Image 1 (tube, chains in turn cyan, purple):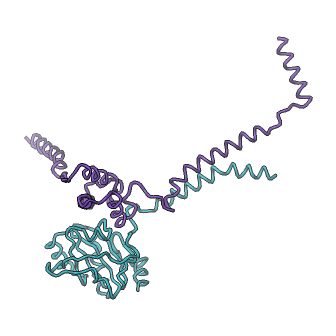
Image 2: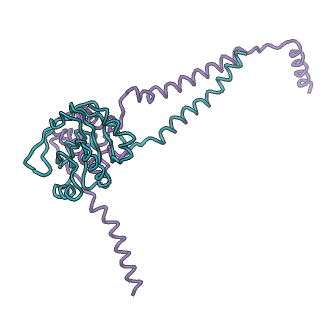
Length: 179
Length: 158
C-alpha cells in the first residue's frame, strides 16, 4: 500500500513540475518589464546643484527637499505623456501638494513656453540640461515622479504618468503615509 | 505624363528612405590616452544594458539615455576608474538591470542551483531504477524451470 502511494507521487512529479513552471510563466505575462524599481528608494536625494528654469543665475541645492513631504516630477517638452499628465499636476498643485519640477534634457525657451501655456504646477522648477542629475536619480525616461518625505528620503518612484485613476487607486495612499 | 510624375516622386521617396537613417546615425568618436582604456571602454559598453531599451547594450542603442551612459562611461574611464568601479557606479543608479551578467542574489540563486538540481534529480532517478532492477527476484521456480527445459529441448530438436 505504501509502495503504491510512493509510486503515485513519483508519477505525479512531472505534472507538478509543469504546474510550477506554468505559474511562473503566467505571472510573467502581467509584469511590465519596462518598469524598473528605483535603487534610490529609502535613500536621501543625491547631492546636486542645479539652476532655476526661469532664472539661470539662481542655483538650487538638493537641500530644498527638506522640511515637508513633496513630489519631484521629471518632465520634458519632447515627452507626450508629460503633456497628458500636466493637467492633473495642476489639479494636485491646487489641492496643496508641493511639487518640484525638473526639466529634463530640454530646451529652456521651449520649457518656459510650455509652463506659460499650460500653467505652472511647480513651486520650484529645476533645469537639468544634460540629464546628469537625472542619471544620479536613476531616471531613464519621462515622466517620472519621486515621492520624497520631509527628511529628504525617497519613498517611491512612479514611472510614467500620474493619472487620476492611478492616484486614486495607489499613489494617494503612498503620499498620505509619508511623513 | 501623370504616370511618369507619380513614378518619379515615389522613386524619390524611396531613395530618401534609404538615405535618411544614414544621415541620422551619428558616430561618437572617443579619444583615449592608451590602448587599455580604449579596450575597457568598449568592453564596458558591451556588458552594460540600456535601461530604456530592454535588450540592447549601451554600445548598440541609439536611445538618448544610452548616449548619456556612453559619455559617462567614457568620462569615468578617462578618470582612470576600474571596470568594477564603473559597473558599481551604474548599478547604484539603475540597479542590477543594467548588468548583462547578474550577480548571485537570493532572487537569482536559482540560475546557478537550478541546473545542478536537475542533474542531481536525474542521477537519483537513474540510481533508483538500477537498484530496483537488481533487487528483482530472478531465480526461476520449479514449474518455470521445467518449461524452460522443454522449450530448450524443442529448439535443439529442430
